[in-house]
Length: 263
Ligand SMILES: [Mg+2]
Image 1 (spheres, helix red, strand yellow):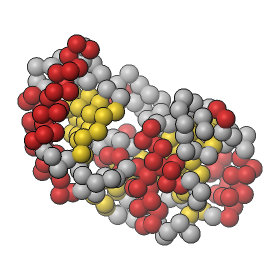
Image 2 (cartoon, protein in one colour):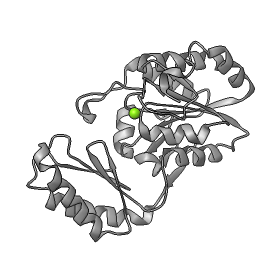
Image 3 (tube, helix red, strand yellow):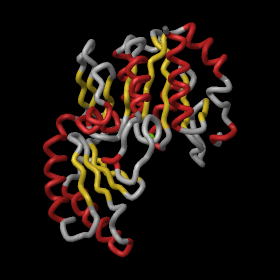
Image 4 (tube, helix red, strand yellow):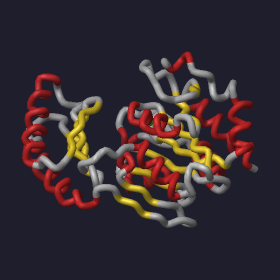
């Protein structure tokens, strides 16, 4: 199950080529660490121009979705294409391209509570060095990567207090981040399946998902059996992906190779 034991998607491309020949692909692409190199700060992340060109070209040949934990406006700003579907905020917000202006919001009724929780967190975290509240519309993140370790318990207490005030919201913990979301099980994988269904069901497209992170495992699980999951880099943990590529550059080459089959 570990990443390195998986077949390499570029080396194993003939097998992929056969599957793509029998069904039009629908691509689901993570942003950070997959289309773009990770940067010191999320706002410094930039997608290389040639990768954007490849994504734009692909999006004219088959459905392409950029799937991210980032908020919708942030994600659109980073990509800047009108040809792709945006699956933002871990799938809670979906917006279609020019030719299919679908808009979907999961847990829309929780928006006022998310806003109130954000206001409360801004207040309680004010004195804690490095703690940052990021509002994403239908979810919010409390980042504390820049907070001294001695203050981490204070961040936890503030988050726990606000979580108690808004019992209807779901609070999860990531890598030096807490997230508040609407209730209910929803993730990148469920959003992928929703979009696939919108595009015409499993029979219509071969879903191909590329990602590098834990949240992308939900996409890999969603396409396991019916499609193709490609993990970017060595995750150092078990993965549900069926292929791997070495790094972001190899992921870009794989996208180019897929594009070459579609023209
Ligand atoms: Mg990523």
